[in-house]
Image (cartoon, rainbow, N blue to C red; front, side, top):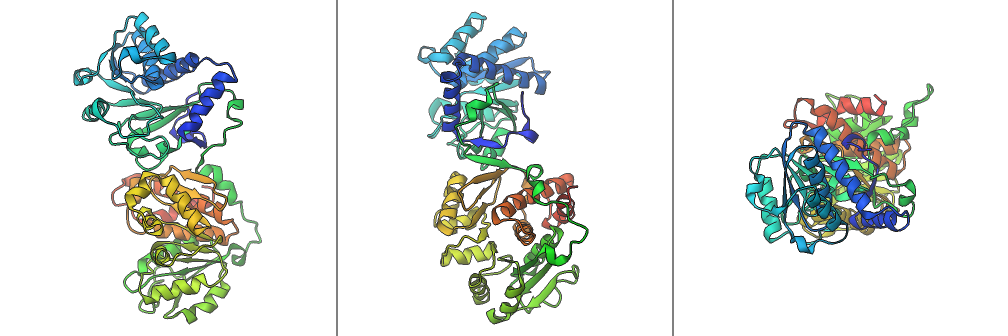
Amino acid sequence: MIARMSNLPHNLYCAAQVRALDRIAIDQFSIPGIELMTRAGTAAFAVLRHRWPQARRITVACGGGNNGGDGFVVARLAHAAGLKVTVSLLAEARSLKGDALQAFEAMMAAGLEPQAFTTNALSDVDLIVDAMLGTGLDCEVEAAWRDAIVAINATPLPVLALDIPSGLNADTGEVMGAAVCAAATISFIGVKQGTLTAAGADHCGEILFDGLQLPAAVYKNIEPSAQRIDHPSLAALLPRRSRSTHKGDCGHVLLIGGAPGMSGAVRMAGEAALRSGAGWVSLATSPEHAAVINLTRPELMVHAVDNAAALSALINRADVIAIGPGLGTSRWGMAMLDAALSCDTPLVIDADALNLLAIEPSMRDDWVLTPHPGEASRLLNITTAEVQADRFFAADALQRRYGGVVVLKGSGSVVVDQEGAVALCDAGNPGMASGGMGDVLTGVIAALIAQGLSLADAARLGVCLHAAAADRAVGQGERGLLASDLMPHLRKLVNGC
C-alpha cells in the first residue's frame, strides 16, 4: 500500500540499511530481486496514473543500476497501458546486469527500444520519470549525468522520481553537484533520512512510500537510523489536566534575555511559554525596557536585572531556565549566562547564549541546545555549509561535544538526545524563515520541561508543536508569516485541538 506524505512511516533509514533490508528480503525470505523490482515499478506506475491521469506521453530516463531497472518496469507497464513511451538510457546497454538486465530484456520483449539520452527526449512529452541514479550515490554528479539532470530541471515538465531524485544524497539530503527537482518521489522499502532534511524537501516534492510488501520480520534486525516525529504521534506526552490542577503544578519558567533594543525576542519567548502551558513565566531583562515589556501581555512577570547578583532569587524559584533570546554578547549578556550556568536548574540555551557558549565551551547533560545552522557552525568551529552538508553528523557532533539534547533547527529539524537517539521533524514551512521563530521555540520547549516532560521529550514535542503551529498559521501565505502568528495555534495544539 502506498503511503503519502501525511502518513509516512516513522522509521527512517540510511542507504546502506535499505540495501541490507533488500538483501535480507532476497536471501532470507526468498523474494527474488526481479520480483521486488517489478513491485517497485508497478507501485511507481500506479502513482503516475493517479497523480497525472491525463499524461499520455512520457520519457523514462534510466541509468544502468537497479534504479534504472525500476524505470524499465515503469516503461513496460506504461507501454502496455497505451501510453507513448520514450526510454532514454544514460548507460551502455551491454553494461546492464542482474535484475536490471532482466527488466531491460522484458521491456525490449514488450516492443520498447531505448535510445541514448538527448534533450530531444524531453520534447513533446507530458511527464518525465527519473530512474537514473539511486540511493548509492556518494560522489559528485558529472559529465552526461549532470547534463541530463540540468536538462530535466530546465523543462517545465513534472518529474516523478523513483526512490530518490537523481543527484540527492540519500543519507544527508545534500545535492551532489546537481539533483533532479521532482514533483513527487516514491520511496521503496524504507524512507531515506536525507529526503526529509536539508535540500531534500526542495528536490523530492511530495514523498510517497511503498514497502513492496516486505514481511515485517525483514525489518526486525535493522535498527532505523532515525525516527520521523510529528505532533499526532507525540501528543499523548501532554495528558489532559485534572480538575484540581493549579499553576504550581504546571511549572515556573525563567527566561533571561532582552538586551537594550532586543526586548521583542524575550517577550515572544515568554508568551510562547505561557501559550504552551507553563504555570507562570518570569522574564529577567534589561532595566531599560523592563517597565514596558509586558504592557501587551500582563501575565508575564518582568524583572529588571542589571547584574548577575539580581538573578539569584529568580533562579532559585525557577523549574527551568531559558536563556538567549535577545541576550546580546555584551558584558551584561555574558554575566547573565555565567549566572545561569552556575546553577543546577535545567536549561534551554538559544541564540546569543549559544554564540557565547561557542567562545567558552562547556558540557552538561541537563540542557537543551537549539542552534540554527549558523550557530551550529560556531559551536563546532566549521562552516555553515559543512553543517548543512550533513545535518545528522553535525547534530550528533554537537551532542557529543556539549552533552544534553541538541535541536539543529532548519528544514527537517534534527533532534539528538543524551543517548544518541536521532529524531527528525519534517513539518514546517518556508514562512518560518523570519525573525523570532527560534525565540518562540525556546519558550515552547521550556514550558514543556516546566510541565514535567524530560528534556528529550520536551525537545521532540516542542519542535513538532512549533512546526505544526506554523503550518496552521500559514493559511494566508508563507511570505509575511510572523512568529507571533503561531501563538493561538500553539494554544489549540497543546489542548489537543
